[in-house]
Amino acid sequence: MGGIFKAYDIRGIYPEEIDEEVAERIGRAFITSTGAERVLVGRDARNSSPPLANALIKGIIAAGADVLNIGLVTTPMIKMMQQHLGYGHAIQVTASHNPKEYGGMKLYAEDAQQITGADGLPEIERLVASSEFTDAQIRGTITKQEIMDDYTDLLAAHITTDLTQLHVIVDASNGPAGKVCESLFPKINIQYSALNFEPDGDFPGHDPNPLSPGATKQAAAAVAEQGADLGCVFDADADRAVFIDEQGRPVPRGNIAAMIARDCLAREPGAAIVYDVVSSHVVKEAVEQAGGKPLLNRTGAAFMARRMREEQAIFGAEDSGHYFYRDMKDADHAVYTLLRVMQIVAKKGEPLSAIARPNTAFYDTGQINIPVKDAAAAVKRVADAFKDHDQTAIDGVMVDFKDGKGTWLIARPSNTEPLLRLRMESKDEQRLQELREQVVKIVG
Image 1: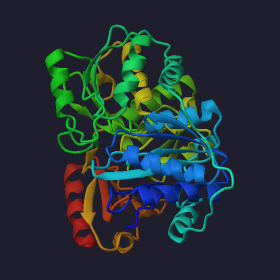
Image 2: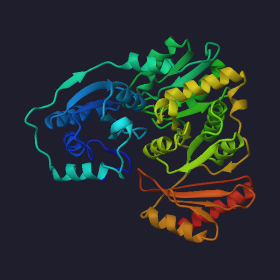
Image 3: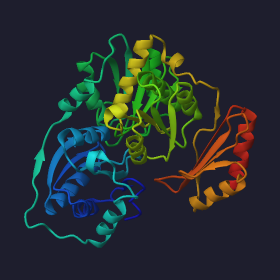
Image 4: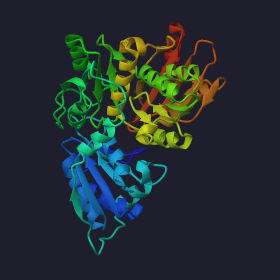
């Protein structure tokens, strides 16, 4: 199966690595492993997702469980509706932001907690490989239900600020987010211009990952041309959001996280805020300055959501554009993030560029991806090279140089690809350049 079972989901090229036969076996293995009696199933807009979803459902009902098929939905939708409808288990057929040739699934247990490599995914993988499951004497049933209106009613209930004076450019990246916005925005009178709203598994607008080079160009140009207040680009399953300010410039994700964190802490002083190991330290400084409790965490939506719940945190952020909320039952939610950003801009009456400017001028390498045969060995080389400095090993190795310049680095294996991911920051540009050259040489 080409290693399709990742750290917290299932992803592979369709149909070479994941096909209908594998999907059906995943359905059977899921029921055998979890004992679920009924499962909520949704899918994204990828060309591979309808056939994979149909095969998955075939496996689930063969194992004796009932299915509620809610069709084309975003990943945040299935997590929210799983809890709202009272389902103990759910599966979203999606490969998230990966290129169009990929297919995949995200599996959820009680309270929309994602099943990961640490708590159930390996057993499902074993069952898929061994086919250690039997057909139930009584097959399960399939029910279809349209849930969009109920879902957007739930979102609209969280709006407490008049947004009618703002104009936003929204790019759905040809994923299901466009359908969400078409249902939601009239309910709360948002003035918007739509880009790539039609679901299309070929992703003709641009790469479905908003962090890819060029993915924000359309939205940035539209903001500038139309004089909009801001722009937002979602990924293919709408659990990531990237923002454009009123000048047509992408806003660093750490600045958006810092802005939302400050707003959350104004509502609940002293609350915990979770941020991942690759996040800009702009986030950490903003939380500390606002009197909050910054908590460093392993990268990965499943791990972030779990830490949110454990710490009763009010907000969490990953540098990849995932933003997590206690209001959303600790889940990451891109459309809700847009609503939060718009409410902050409307309340403050200032441009997004002014509100989201960094607290401190960090120079930043951004994420550097280096193909490696053995990522763990590369991480160890980095750790050994800087053994005399403070280190944290939550996810790969983070080195804090305590040099008075805010210099730090992270080296970690990718959860989904054969890559070593590096990031470095410093308030001293020359120091950052020297460190980058040193680390790249160490990694080889």
